[in-house]
Image (cartoon, rainbow, N blue to C red; front, side, top):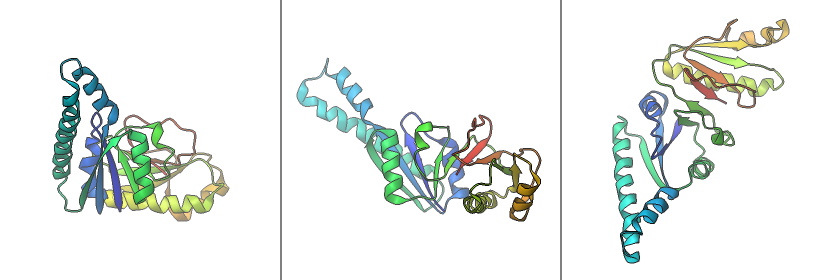
Length: 213
């Protein structure tokens, strides 16, 4: 599984970086230095530095963050880790990189609505051990798509050595019968990892890991 972990200078995705060796065969860390940060520092520095020295300020900031990106890369105890360093806007950079490289999983630590426009499955890591995970299904209108999503979620759970369950919210007998061959059905949501379809109207839990498909 190929994973992309965006890292912002104010959001290091520490939980995802720790989880990556367990979930990912190949990991790409996308370190994004916000252009606005450079512009802000240059603006403040312009009061005390001559104009010809301002370019050195930008180079200095970029070099500091490149070094930080390399430290993050080394923190993942695995060989298949690549670092990509960009200066730009966060969401635009992530979207451009996913279109370019087509990763299997986009990993972050917090729920960022701006990432929902990206078609790649999104992992939101709250940290901690995951022993059980439940996929929440609200509708069977797209059964083929649901079947594919269940298999993907099951693969994730296998890598975590976690038990996998399916919760069918409507609870009608016809729907339960259709889902029964695809996994163990539970009447209540359980576990440390919850899996949702991103087109479902939902409030993302704050205390559990979440996978949006």
